[in-house]
Amino acid sequence: MIESYLGIPVDYIVIGLAVAVLVILILLIINMVRFSGLKKKHDIFMKGKTAKSLEDTLIYRLEQMDDLIKSNASNERNIKTIFDTLKICFQKFGLVKYDALDEMGGKLSCALCLLNDRNDGYIINIVHSREGCYNYIKEIIDGNSIIGLSDEEADALEKALGKNA
Image 1 (cartoon, one colour):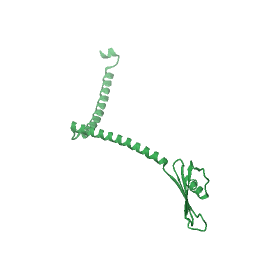
Image 2 (cartoon, helix red, strand yellow; image 1 turned 30 degrees about the horizontal axis):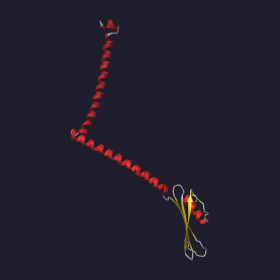
Image 3 (cartoon, rainbow, N blue to C red; image 1 turned 90 degrees about the horizontal axis):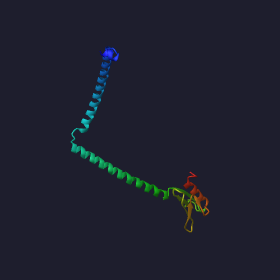
Image 4 (cartoon, helix red, strand yellow; image 1 turned 180 degrees about the horizontal axis):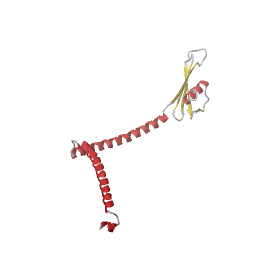
């Protein structure tokens, strides 16, 4: 009767249903294996825990996360402050020792150049002679001096700018 109604032999219908049942059984076995693995992981996670202790653990971890977020924000502000401060601090220097008077010897005179990140700063020239020690300061703006520089001062500036490494 089914054969005449569907136009398909009963043998094919039985084979088709058998294949479908076989596929469903294979999928059922695969799902059982996966579920077993998840159950083991769940049991390990929940071992020795009650709902209250698990809740306490989660609350503690969330509070730790909040503290870490606050600490990170504070660290970011501090790092920005440090970098802003570093821009105006002297970061580059050049030192040239020389004899101001050739007969003195010992290279007791020196020119010291101190520059910040924008190449602004000072050249301090200390000239040692028999009569005493004289100090001169010249301002440097954007790597240049408005006042003329001696050879030693120019060398110290070049060293600070990295041109004469």
